[in-house]
Length: 390
Ligand SMILES: *Cc1c(COP(=O)(O)O)cnc(C)c1O
Image 1 (spheres, rainbow, N blue to C red):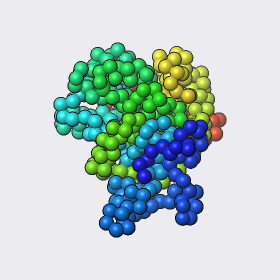
Image 2: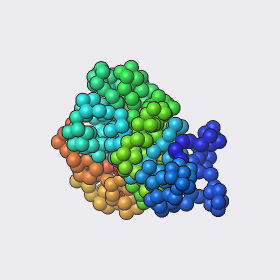
Image 3: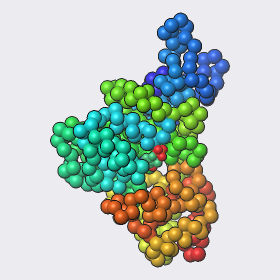
Image 4: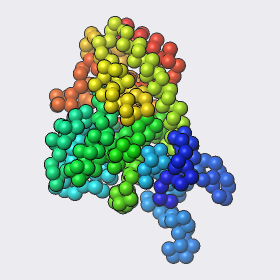
């Protein structure tokens, strides 16, 4: 019940692992899909006689175990852990690996909630942080404080400007400093990028996004490759208690089974959108790591299978035109979040990134971010055309 990647699926292909890893058909009923174990506690066969190690559902629940094993197999890690949200996963790994007085390097364009967690929750606890650009490994190295830096925290691609960090190079920077590299892999998903195989020590996910993939569940995950780190995370997962419940675990696991096919279609559709926007008179710039002119293109080509489903672009006529386009879209739903089957459009400056206005994290006011879904591509292009031309 440890959430380890199961042996017979470890060497198989990604799609096979996505569908089978972490769960064997139920021995009593043969149920092919893990049941939702809606139970808080477990009958013991005599004091301490646990069946399969299950004692209390904060510590472990079979539906969550199946999800955790699946996540570990997909990220090629030693052990997976599922949480009630991405931020719960983040807080747990920070508390597990850092102590007051320690220091971490974080992305200078970190996900807003991650930045808030470091600035407003971990800093008052005593953890110092320095923002640095993930695309510049030398700048990250310069931000390290020898002997004090415990973690380098990276997102790649970042949100919403899709900056790329070189995971192998950043792992060297971290390990040279005796620190661990933590990669938030939410935007790429384990299908497009596996940071642990590139030298990272911990992978973080908001499974709310591509892993769940259907905009119907909030969740988070950690996958680690080292047993000692796994033990610390396991202790803190149980001690802090922000675990994924059985219903949420079931939904997330159901989502993961189709991750590969969804990501392929997200990427296909995103490429169509990129090509279309690149030729559109109302658009001044398209930002996508798959474009050769993107500064992170070469690194992305090395470490990602494809370039993902998020596309950002700038509207030539400025902020009001960008706001109007967001309001006019019909197939693209105007909403925050990303990574679901449905296409979403948003204005980062006024929505997801409103809290960083006026800071160095501020994003251009004419920027629109798309989470390109898996609808019919022609309908997406027609919708964007209508939205941009008014
Ligand atoms: C959404 C998101 C998070 C936070 O996850 P929640 O599930 O909302 O708590 C963290 N990192 C990235 C990159 C995200 O997109």
